[in-house]
Length: 352
Ligand SMILES: Cc1cc2nc3c(=O)[nH]c(=O)nc-3n(C[C@H](O)[C@H](O)[C@H](O)COP(=O)(O)O)c2cc1C
Image (cartoon, rainbow, N blue to C red; front, side):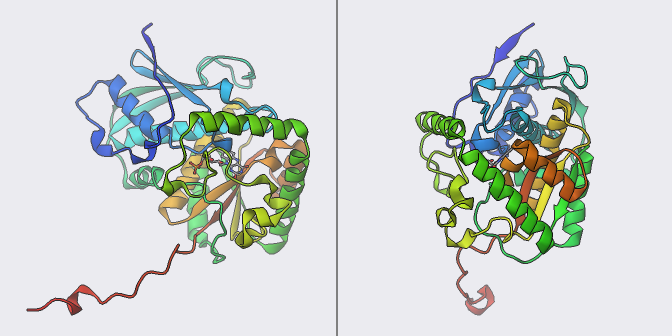
């Protein structure tokens, strides 16, 4: 079979992809390849971007790039597959936006429940299956892909409306996952405690700190300094949340003394099982939910340590009375970066 690996390197301008670059007249392979520009804008644990794509004839296969795995921070590879699922959702969303109907097969070579470890099988195979107009609700998701960023600062404490929460939960269900909500003060205090403990345990592990240092060094070699639009990222875009923030709030700045309790809404993305297939679905659900929120002006950031640590994960499950939480997500609006100037409206400054 005709297999063309796609060169994949860091590109500081990835966010400036322009939809006018899409041409309906191109071949299926070329149109799939163009939509990869959107796939790579997905979030990933420690910005590892652990995906790899291969064009096989007219199909595109998604693989986990295991050289970018962080076995201490993410011992099961769950976060890695979640990130790949998020990239897959972006790809699907872009294809739909451009009027193409994707046919997606998840884990085409594995039986349900088979482990992924060490396997070089694709996580998904995407083919094109005709054309279809894109509904307005999905166009909105596509437009949010380029506007989404992980936001680490303090959120505006104003609550998120119930109708938006309902819609976000609906987005998760669409991808066979669920979004649990924790917003009352007691639940948030408990999550805050769980997060702090998971962070503390992780940070006190030497092998975790070594892994992180190695990854950051590697990132520093691969990636140029981030563009001004990415101010929330660390200097190399690799390590976003100062992990010590929970131990030493000064590291996170005054505003974010407690990143959980100060957040209006803590979401917990989860699934009904804990197989690689559930992880892939959850990753797609995660991205779909976060994009929906972003389209409605709500930003998100993620907390993986309480899921990576089994004892904490069980505590999160108990809080919600649901099994298989996959990721904690902070949701909130952000205060405007600077007050806008008071201006006279155009009608007051025009003469006749
Ligand atoms: C599965 C997963 C787990 C993540 N875990 C964390 C986390 O624990 N702490 C954090 O600050 N960010 C976390 N992130 C967010 C990444 O740090 C962020 O996506 C990455 O740095 C790229 O930045 P961007 O989302 O703004 O493009 C996670 C993202 C994913 C997909």
